[in-house]
Amino acid sequence: MGPMRIERLGENAIILVDLDRPAYKVAESLRRRVPELLDVVAAYETVGLYFDEPLVPGRIEAALDQDPEGESASVMHEIPVCYGLGEDRGEVCERLGVSEAELVARHSEQPYRCAAVGFKPGFAYLGDLTEEIAGLPRRPTPRVRVAAGSVGITGRQTAVYPCECPGGWWLIGKTPLIVADPDTDFFPIAAGDEVRFVPIDVARFQELEGSRL
Image 1 (cartoon, rainbow, N blue to C red):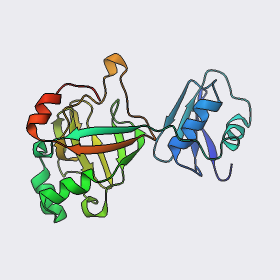
Image 2 (image 1 turned 90 degrees about the vertical axis):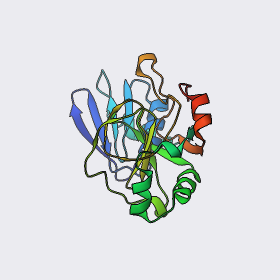
Image 3 (image 1 turned 180 degrees about the vertical axis):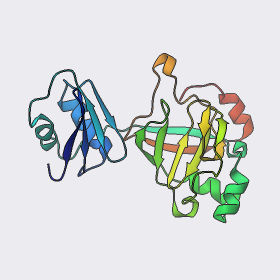
């Protein structure tokens, strides 16, 4: 399996590091080929595995060797965004040296891959931003409250806040859609999926507000 290493996280968990392919592909392969696992969690560069009974030695390596390409079962999600509702868009444009029209065009011109889901239930880390709008550090002072549906950027990443919570990303727009709902186990975006943002106006935002992705 190449350079991959297995480290223990306790009696019933291990973490895979030094992967030779994207973490979401490793996670996808193990979900299919190792049914005795209770859960498989992909981060950016590692995968956590959780189980009840000790795994047979070599089980993980053998499963990945049987699936070297990690067949993709990703889904494409289209998320409408009203960029006019982005609280930081003016300052973002000033810091990046782009117009608001270019910010919208660059952010919505390409699909993004979900590398991992974390921080909050349903918070999907999406990348990579194009060079023209990448590179902003987190805000100097995080907000105490970021509204659900807010679309943010930082570094080379973009994301939609799935719920109201504190946050330090720069807000450039807002989607009217519900992108996650823990109460009904609604988490449509998974690691490996793709997301494309579609610009809309305020009128369309109001029509779609409260709909599910």
